[in-house]
Amino acid sequence: MSNTEATVATDFQAPESIVDGVVIGKVLGDNSPGAKVSMKDHWQYQKDHANLVSPLNRRKFRVMVVGTGLAGGAAAAALGELGYDVKVFTYHDAPRRAHSIAAQGGVNSARGKKVDNDGAYRHVKDTVKGGDYRCRENDCWRLAVESVRVIDHLNAIGAPFAREYGGTLATRSFGGVQVSRTYYTRGQTGQQLQLSTTSALQRQIGLGNVEIFTHNELVDIIVADGRCQGAIMRNLITGELKVHTAHAVILATGGYGNVYHMSTLAKNSNASAIMRAYDQGAYFASPSFIQFHPTGLPVNAHWQSKTILMSESLRNDARIWTPKKKGDERPANDIPEDERDYFLERRYPAFGNLVPRDVASRANSQQINAGYGVGPLKNSVYLDLRDAIERLGQPVIKERYSNLIQMYEEAIGEDPYKVPMRIAPTCHFTMGGLWSDFNQMTSIPGLFTGGEASWTYHGANRLGANSLLSGSVDGWFTLPFTIPNYLGPLLGTERLATMLRRLSRL
Image (cartoon, rainbow, N blue to C red; front, side, top):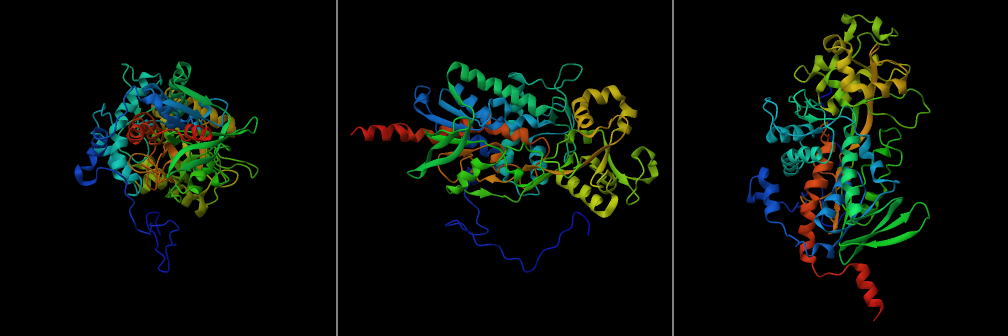
């Protein structure tokens, strides 16, 4: 059976739904414009018909943001600059330490600056196809349309994107596409975008528009009168539990990849916040859609506690291969060209080494499981920069990937300029998360979600470089529009704490 074929169990029975009013096969209403306009115009129509809050009334509304990664940090900074009373929480000692800082490869944008026939439609098509057609397509249109503003905005707030000789922003290709739409800062794009977003957030904190609470972990959300009205937080230094009330709450607390013992996530990325929301009745969507990144560093010892990501961008120049002979013990450089199997190029000639992540990971695993694995534990395949170095020269490769190559050298003890790197699939990203409607609001009114904590955009497999994009789109260009739409009708409504204090004095 090939890696594109599947067998269907004839005796499978779907489990019963435990949610009242929800049955298997039911499509939940997403509060989008629906048939009023074409799908590509849904987001513009939604913004044009959204409720607004006057600048004079914005300080009357408090918004809690839990998480300071790209989605949470951006939402807090944007809402603070708009004039809302924003409280932002992180369990780190500083907002810059959010796990978005670990992302490497790049951020997609269909700006169409290269003459390669790229555009918003092709970006949507690649996203939906890459997600195995499990995406909600109007979300994907928003992702592609707003991607242009994301790059311009991040560039304006200080992200040091790579540039061509003439000064224009540089791009490269990523898996699952046949164009060049990925903007990058070497192999540390997540770090630079996180630092730029944190800088914008710190500016609002300094101006007094946003108050930050570090070392604070979410213990539970507060649901009263049918809507989310705050959260209970624990100070991780003192252990103090404190109630914080708000008119709206945003959870941007990341994914749940650490359900696997080995993943590229930091060990404290525990997904506890979204599970508290689930316990309170928030729907959870697509939990089984978990992405295994094809270019992770393999497990080299049984005592290892986690795996390390190597950016997908390496697949632009490196070639993936295994020996044609099973159990081949020869050093990689001793294996002649005609005894190497460049299996991705053989199986998928149109995309070659830049196939989507799920396809590459599956193919890598098939080679390893069939006995062609390499390395001490025979659990990896080769990622070889030899041909690129011969074609472009080592200085060019060093300029593009030096931090990745240095990281590999320090972790593995081998020089990728001289011997092929070893890679293996590893748990990396969760496409599932809290279900949300087109406005990023969960099934609990007043509780919003963004970034990897949410389920939107990615279907069953995230397209490479769409993660940093989705977090930025949610934080900078979605929640600052949809939060006011929710708050508008609540004008004059007291926060829960204010109401309780007033009642206690009666």
